[in-house]
Length: 295
Image 1 (cartoon, rainbow, N blue to C red):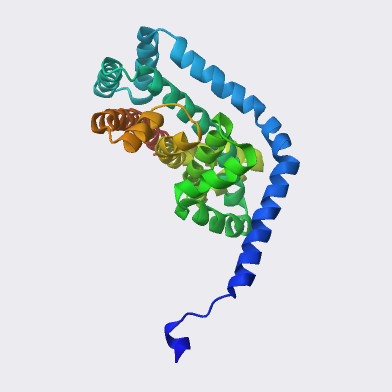
Image 2 (image 1 turned 45 degrees about the vertical axis):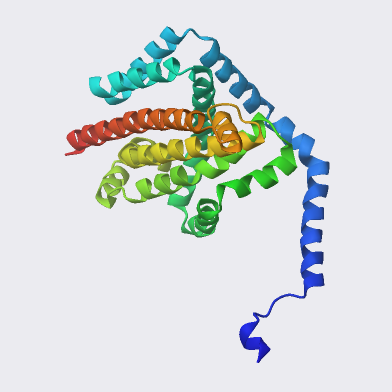
């Protein structure tokens, strides 16, 4: 009756050989193509470096002014704008300014990449049920895979540094923008699409002038979630050399520094709240505007 208590499994030697073959194949792939892939990401690396330099080298009053202007444009709310300024002042007061600027730069670049890659994929999914059936399971795996697992193939492929960390963050954060772009376009009222067809709109005109504007609030919700996930992953990516607020948190864990971890953790929360409130307010404003235009 051993078969009732012992789950049938692959022979240990066969399982070991299978794992060894997969690991060996991936190592051979990284040796053969690792440098080529790294060269492909060189423009992204420079963009990230220049973004970090801009954020860290610009005098803090100008950064405060820039953030206040951007938050005001997005939210049109004095409360959110003032809260953003107070949060950044508190971060600077507790000597976390440089790390915070690096984290914001990384989050900005990763979110921008996720938008550039994710929105076209979401549009493609909305136009093809077959593509949606293929991509959805991949997104399910990406969203349920533990964040630390993303670091393993990326480090094996590209080593330790900015680009591997950025790639891991983008992979982790991109599913929401893909899903919600697809959903937003699919939810556009069919009567509106029929009216656009009646006026002789081409597929491109219908997408550009009807579907994308009406789906924009849903797409903004996807961007909001992508920003939140990018911020969360930036902390994990500090394990492979990504600079910012994640490294002090990692140091605090290793050395049991409670205040260091708590302060930097609260700084991450503060940035997340700024991004969240500004992007949500912008999405709501878009929704109201579209209701007025189409209602």
